[in-house]
Length: 154
Image 1 (tube, rainbow, N blue to C red):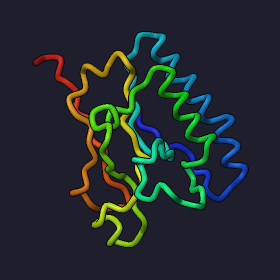
Image 2 (cartoon, rainbow, N blue to C red):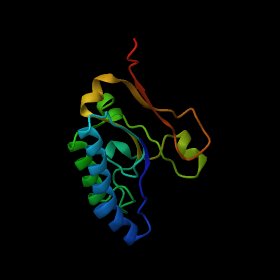
Image 3 (cartoon, rainbow, N blue to C red):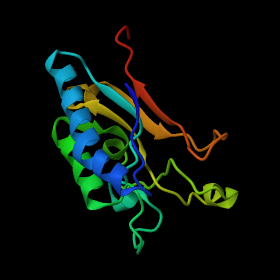
Image 4 (cartoon, rainbow, N blue to C red):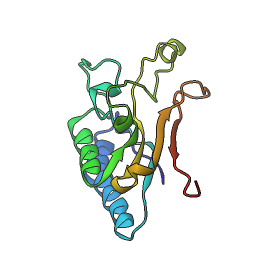
């Protein structure tokens, strides 16, 4: 499933809605799909910075959207409920970013944040061939994420 989570940066109401309603409802929904025996792949803009490796400047004094404790804790809860951050699993120490400021030099310098993810159910991780971020594709402030799964016919 493709998802674009709320960005709660400028609105306390959006932040509260996201952290108290949307995140738990989304987690419950994807867990129900798994309980029905469906493999779950979640791709998209989750608007959360999971670890300090997922941002250029981990010493930010201002807490940008996606870096607040509640947002990070909800993302960790999603992972703990049975999902894998495929990029981080395959590249545990690599900093690579999906979202960049509007200035063109930031992307060239790889100065950004990782807020887009490819998550899979724990039991699908053995089907993951690669999970990567394509910096060579331009056209927006975001770099596309690419998840490659094994072809069952191979």
